[in-house]
Image (tube, rainbow, N blue to C red; front, side, top):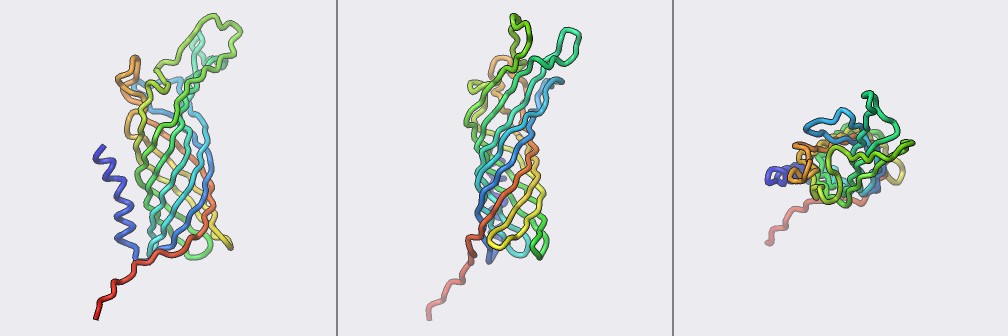
Length: 234
């Protein structure tokens, strides 16, 4: 946990060291997640789950081409567990959807290139996520529902870890408009800690979130931040 806290400070120190004058933007973003969970032991019937993503962005661009981007996002993650029929084939009539709803707080170093309206950028850095809620939904359309089946691993608010931390990498482009900037980004995130409490009955040894998301944001310029030289009294 101490190492993850130190990682959160790296983009801040980098931006402070490189910037004597910076432009500040703030805006809104929205998109969707395609998420899965890396489980140990692995489930060969686990598949991805789509969910919503949205929040606010604060970006400070430093000279020459480096800045800091922080966000506060609502993010849905999880996975879907499929089941197999007695003959070993996937059963399309029975599955379990495991969903986590998080507040994500990434702190990212923003490196960008381009001098005209269109710029390309790389984002990378740590993220911290706080769990809002967790749910386990059974999708059962079988004709005969007399047999009750449960998901392989426990997945609900009682077994969920309240905090997730991990790393984030994103690529994208910005397009400057007359009064703001559109930002398009594809991003991958990897959780570094378990999202299911290993002390829970029947819990897996490992359970880390993996997410690929795509988002669109619109940013408004707020002005310049300048580091003024201290005046020396005569």
